[in-house]
Image 1 (spheres, helix red, strand yellow):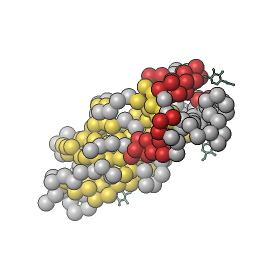
Image 2 (spheres, rainbow, N blue to C red; image 1 turned 90 degrees about the vertical axis):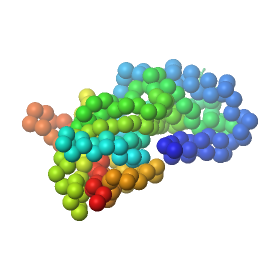
Image 3 (cartoon, rainbow, N blue to C red; image 1 turned 180 degrees about the vertical axis):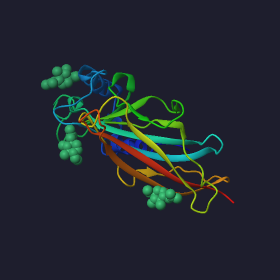
Amino acid sequence: MVRSLFFACTYIFIYGNSVWASVSTEAIRQRMEWVRENAEPALIPIQGEPLNVSLALDLSAIREVDISRGEVEILAVRNIGWKNPSFSWLENESLYKKNGDNNIHSFSMDIKNLWTPDIVAFNAVHAPELLSPPIANVAADGAIFYAPNERIRFRCKLGSFESTEGTNCTLKYGSWTYHGLLIHLTANKNDFTKWNYEEDERFDLLGTYVESETKYYPCCTEPYPDVKFILNIRKKS
Ligand SMILES: *[C@@H]1O[C@H](CO)[C@@H](O)[C@H](O)[C@H]1NC(C)=O
Ligand SMILES: *[C@@H]1O[C@H](CO)[C@@H](O)[C@H](O)[C@H]1NC(C)=O
Ligand SMILES: *[C@@H]1O[C@H](CO)[C@@H](O)[C@H](O)[C@H]1NC(C)=O
């Protein structure tokens, strides 16, 4: 079963420290209205400094390794997190009472209502196929998490795929239109996980790595950050 661990945690987060029965549709509707009133889906929520956008990948399957075309296809949940402080309802007494016991800590919302970062895989061979609903989670402090489950096909040189060390295939992500002074893309060393990975009879997954890089181009003074998710794969002998 492919399900983002994030959503499982959110569930406990919402219901774990409040009384089940106190969460009503009406209470969620009020927070949703509050967020809608403050949402500008076309506008990046920056306030002076770059917007921090975190990126993580949870690999669930390697579907295909096409040596002749130099293409690999995987299934993975991409966890994207950012914050829009104007969504926070922590300071609104009618929506959140400090020390109150029926506060709502987060709810789910269709991403069409929200601005979402345009993070794309630069070496994909076609648009990712979305396998999950286009729904994000909005938390009381304005933090937003969106975790699309995707089928991704990307280019990789597979020359050493049949060797003992296997080959490193790199999936490179970055913002399509925002440079590093607007979006600060971040990923930690351990953010390429395999919580839902299913072993494959055809391939060995020898390791996963994350590398971040900031590039400067001759044209411009702005930094261009990217995040690389690296899979070390080998043909099973
Ligand atoms: C608190 O939220 C409610 C519901 O969205 C809104 O009507 C009200 O104006 C807000 N109060 C303040 C002080 O922003
Ligand atoms: C982004 O993250 C950096 C480092 O953690 C932090 O110093 C900065 O305040 C954050 N920026 C925003 C807008 O939250
Ligand atoms: C794959 O990449 C990792 C991380 O950069 C590196 O440590 C490892 O040696 C590479 N393996 C191969 C076979 O290139």
